[in-house]
Length: 429
Image (cartoon, rainbow, N blue to C red; front, side, top):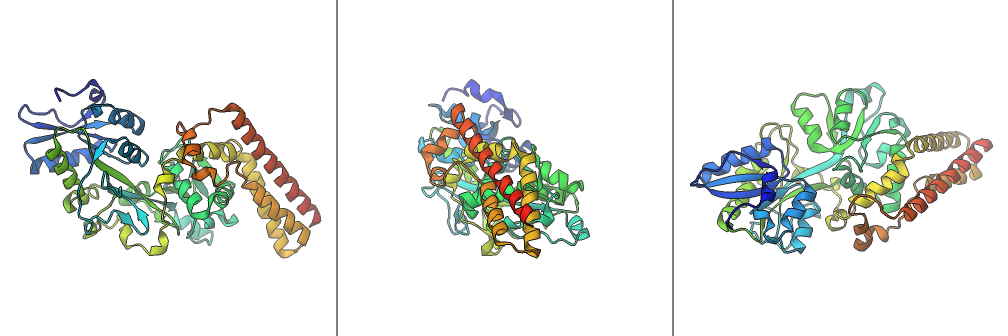
């Protein structure tokens, strides 16, 4: 390869290469404070190699690595769950051998690495709930233990949750709920939680809102919370029952002309020393290698030591195709009609509380039907598992205006009927 194509000029991280260096090009979206740490330590072990990081967001990295020459890249290292299987299927990677005794490639029943060895898990990030324990204690409440606990009326007004169309990690967070609870039950649960929550458009927002005392509970990804904990914030983090830890990956490109250096870099990243580096300097990331947790910082949780009931065997092959459909449906059913969602679920909870003290069979039946309608989704579970259907939402929007209008109308009709049913139940009490 005569030189680095112009695509690499977009964002080069690290010091300029010395004339005598062999340059190793690593495409990544990890932050510079992490990449600099790895550059320094790897080059101490391999002084004849200079690591040149190229910063690319997920979509740009996918385009670059799909080119004939792969943009001159040697290694791809990123938290881009969907990119790695796509690139694998396009023949963009070559096999890397690892010791499965040290790197199991799975967590509980969930597969983390490619079964064919074409990409490996570098780290894992867990999804759950950031908590202000003092705020809950003041109101005599305990932290939730499951996703469904968040729907309890006692937590209403104390929760913040991200909008998936605006926050990159949140489609995966909500898909964990949808997979573990079932598609229809999962949407009903998300709608009920949103009925008592504030919606946020920033990834750091849930943790910031909780640590600032403006909410007691926030749905988020763990490293935001653990980063705040490492800085002394008085918060905690709950991994609810049936959550998942999703991996970042690393792979050697098929077109590398620096194969030995590329393999050496991947080996270092997956070594005990390399894995421990991600836990230094308050990064609070979780290694994919169990033995790296020996002498870990107090702020880092060892997911391999968590109780088995913590995990749901998340299907990443389906999950990687769902961000678009999750974002679209969340917008249609929740974001666009959030005030209505809040009003509806307040009415349902009020009616259920009154029915508990004054039972009425007809009223209970009406409220039960209203509850079902309130979580209505126009997409079936079969469609939500169909790759061809899901791939229609790859741009995280629905380009069929007629279908969008129909889905909005179906959701609106279901909500209107639910409100009518609750009103009729209230009249009986």
